[in-house]
Amino acid sequence: MPRNKYPEETVKKILDVSLKLFLEKGYEQTTVLDIVDNLGGLTRGAFYHHFKSKEEVLTAIFENEYAECNPFVKAKQMNAANGLERLKLALKLGLNNNIENEQRKAMTSMAHSLMSNPRFLAEHIKGIQQDSKDLALIMEEGMADGSLKQGNAKVLAELFMLLSNVWMLPGIFPADEDEMILKLTMLEEIFVALGYNFIEDEMGHTFFEILDTLEV
Image (cartoon, rainbow, N blue to C red; front, side, top):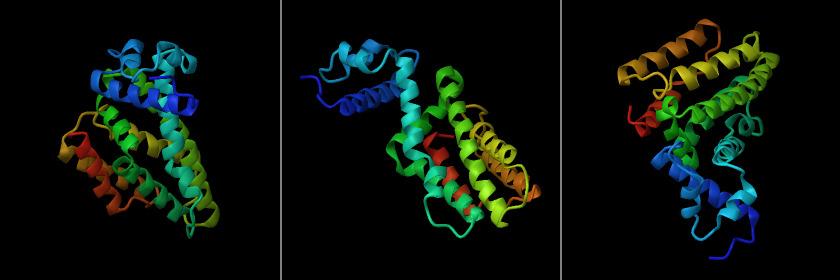
């Protein structure tokens, strides 16, 4: 098979094949040669033309996923009555992405083994940091229009992202279904107590659909 003359198609192929291998074999066990062997005729030179290492590939996978599936950016572009409604919309979009988007579903499945894959964990944390900044912007909108209580949007966004994307991930803190229900209840209670009631029952149902894919 000749080398694809369209660079973006070559890059996509490398990323898709690499993600599949990372999930099947594990990141540490996957080599560049493994990736090349599964590229359907593309050469090692084609791989190194676009990426210096599998570490760069993993970073690109997470960056692409973030750019394509960022619910906070999408919510900012959609009509909403106020900041609170935009916040709820962003959270729903984020949860639905984990069910409807095939690449996001694959990325979510990585979360089940974050502690055994330090590189996955590091990229996951980088994503949380960026998501926190985007969430804070929506919270600031709500505080400005009066739909959200005044407060430190940066700190509140960081707290929510930390709890929802680290504490509640069974790949980091193993938990059975009853414990996950308790955690979700506590997460809602924490923010209600702080004066921010934006977690809806529908979000909880979607969250547990996602957990089913992780075999919790």
